[in-house]
Image 1 (cartoon, rainbow, N blue to C red):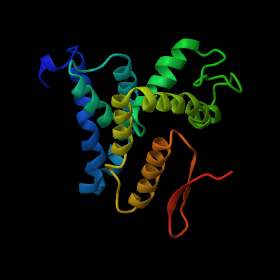
Image 2 (cartoon, rainbow, N blue to C red):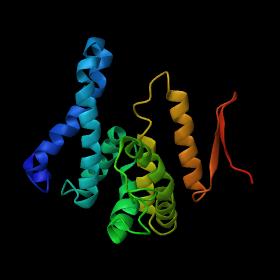
Image 3 (tube, rainbow, N blue to C red):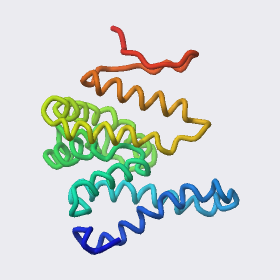
Length: 204
């Protein structure tokens, strides 16, 4: 990675981690015997993807806007969720309220206990509350910032890149559900997995 492309030379290590992600993810498909040995490294890189996504949204990695966009899409694949969602939920919401009432990512919503059940449940609970600022951010982007809205759509599209023959039909339905909802301004959709599988708007 040419130093002049990066804003800070320290991010050469970030690039090494980002390039290692697909290698470690795909290696067990070529050499199944490595799967067990690579599992700890896979978990470490998955956690790293989240940390890098956080840092990238606070301080863009590259000097080039285009490279930053591509890198955000790259991270979305290995982070498991479009990185743009850090902006409404973390940058704009969490740093405004900082674990106080109104923080969509608040860690003590139901209890102050620090134990495994709460650590396990937090991502699922937080996802529900983070959906409100995320959907509002998408609606505003669609209405007032077409370029940002296209970037959001690209990140959702990118999520399907690593679909396998086993899960591709499910991934396609999820991607279609996200696209259908986004194009309808955040309207709620339902995935029907019964044959013939499809996506439809929720009827009330």
